[in-house]
Image (cartoon, rainbow, N blue to C red; front, top):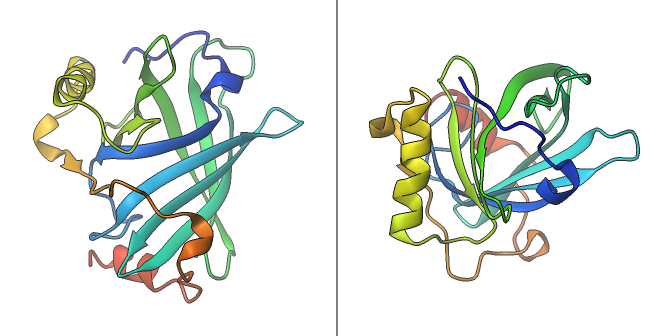
Length: 180
């Protein structure tokens, strides 16, 4: 599997909207306006904030990412979350491989070696259909089954974190574990 080489981590920081993904048990089935915000820490790790809205409530989880091999120029990162998000006790670590990034750092395809997870990301909440097809093709070239992709609903004016009540009980997370 080919991954991006020489990823400019500083340029990669900021907000990314989930345009499509493979459904996973770690995300609510009916989540909308799903996005990730990445912030570079002084120690070169990355603070990760994943957010989604379901039923008017904001579900979120925070974690950290770091280069899998600090000596490599490949965009292979590890992402670590403490779960469940409402009572963070157990560390869960996963692969986060940047398979494609456009030259302007506006669109990305992210996956991992088992090909069980895939995300198509954009700096904007919507992408042109032709751009979407090109990003899907990048994933197919890396061996992903595009028929598993689910487009993520995004509103024209995505909510801000402070405009919706948080799901502080972690109901979204518990429901997602059971496929709801």
